[in-house]
Length: 461
Image (cartoon, rainbow, N blue to C red; front, side, top):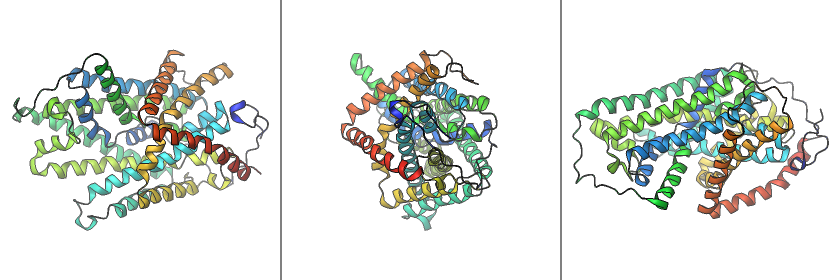
């Protein structure tokens, strides 16, 4: 098969031979809207909503402003989801942002997006598993002090589960995400019902904080939004399984848009409940607002309740990250950017070699305690990859104006334009605020070119 679509970014621009898929199975088209919603919720809602409210309240100690920035953060995610949903429905290929960028901008930009996304996903899996291990210890005395062992066991357990096939992975994701949503909504409902019976803190207990004004207020809003947008990161989850969805033209947009609205509803409910229990003056600067709320609601048992809630929440995240990580190198292998063995698929629909590779990498991050460093270095790429994907939408609209598009982003070009401008603005803020890691990230981009040439030589006969 030849491909002559690519311009200067996709060097070489001539023909490209893709190796044939090994006859060992293929991805199964068995997923629906419920899975899309579940993987988005599982991939998005984590520890952020339990910790971030205190950071935002310290910056914006005003209830209307505090609540407004959570809505603005969801609006940014929604703009991105609308833009990416068009690409995912247009060319339904599993693999996340990689195939979208590859198809529009060429193999090399796709390679950079793919390998950084895969490493970041495996690093996130390790980080989430470590936090889960920290919370399990006090509940199960035999696991106390064995954080790395617990984290590794969780990663391996979900790998074994998914090795059985995508249907098992689908069921596990729907169950764990449902339990997560019910647990968080349950906490919000209990907080709202019980808060009226609690004795409110006095003014002495909660000294008033002054709201900044002018440039200081604008800066506080931007910094607060940066923290909040991280808690919404994960809305791309359904895109990683596009070709496994029975009706991608309908279900990809619905799962992404509906999933973000569901996450927003949970976040708003939790924040309203938190404010009913802990006034914003007291919330400001609290590193773990959820813990303070649980203690006030449940007394001495609050810690146990919160630990169980957190463990349930993180289980869904680990499963989602395992599923996502196993699709990225698989898609790259099919395009000749990685060895062909990585495109082998279990009869149950799981890319087993990639599942194994992602599990080993996550275990390596856990064993060496290097996932924080990796995530810090690759944080630069999260927004950069979004920016490249939004650019891909503009490129394909211009290159293929008459192509079939089951879903079209409303308000084109303004909606993707605002999403792209927001990504570039946050990228600039990241470079300015963390120059060291940004420079290292740019150096990694430069080093990716010889790595790209090497894997192309080895993967393409």
